[in-house]
Image 1 (cartoon, rainbow, N blue to C red):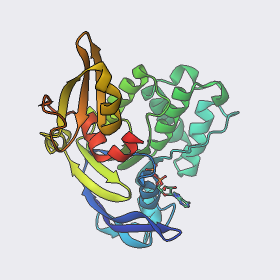
Image 2 (spheres, rainbow, N blue to C red; image 1 turned 180 degrees about the vertical axis):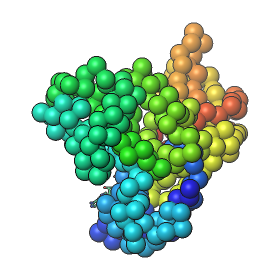
Image 3 (cartoon, rainbow, N blue to C red; image 1 turned 30 degrees about the horizontal axis):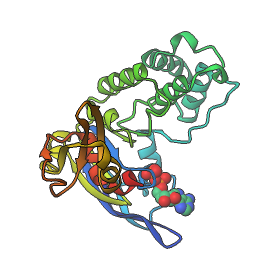
Length: 290
Ligand code: ADP
């Protein structure tokens, strides 16, 4: 099982939205991390064959997916960001509808839908209309439909949007139990969502592959670029305006700022152990200071 993304470039109005993006994925859970507008959705749509790239190829198990799109689609599950539901359908009817679109035979479809609705915790409401579902319930239904054909490759575009903390935990467990011997790619700009479940993180920044690695390795690359400084009240505004701040904590002696900076920001700054949250700010600092 091997998914290869080779030198993908995509232009809109002559602007490179994706620039020469290449990576190879074997079974595992991958977090595609990038700020809004970095090209995550565009890349997913290209992998899923919904839009065409300008250059490059997507290859699954050594076959170009565009040469035989039906074969790839049969092993692909996709939760798009702008997933549309039919509000008057019940959860079950919707799942059966998706199963029919995927060509799953009727008698098997019902069993499969039940298993999945149970897995995402919607069995009790599966006969209720979707318009009565909360945002998180709709999102879980979206995840269930993406898994209907027991896909080898599961692509989830911002799957945790609208989930409350309890649902986020459920989601993580769901992905862990599902991901064995599968390629799961999920995009997010919420670091904590992938911190626990992603085997590897792929960082996409302004359409370019910025970095890739296991979370702890990536975090180590910014050792020495995260600082804590105690700042007096009269200097606080200046410091906040001048630096990329990952956290601020008030104390009786002043404010402790956590600063992302390649150089020592003040004489009294001391280096601290970076986190994935810091790494995100390190990569996307321009968005952070805006
Ligand atoms: P992300 O999913 O990381 O937020 P997108 O892939 O949605 O990023 O968008 C990347 C960039 O491409 C953005 O600047 C967006 O405005 C632009 N873009 C996306 N789709 C289109 C389109 N159909 N036409 C023109 N520009 C687009």
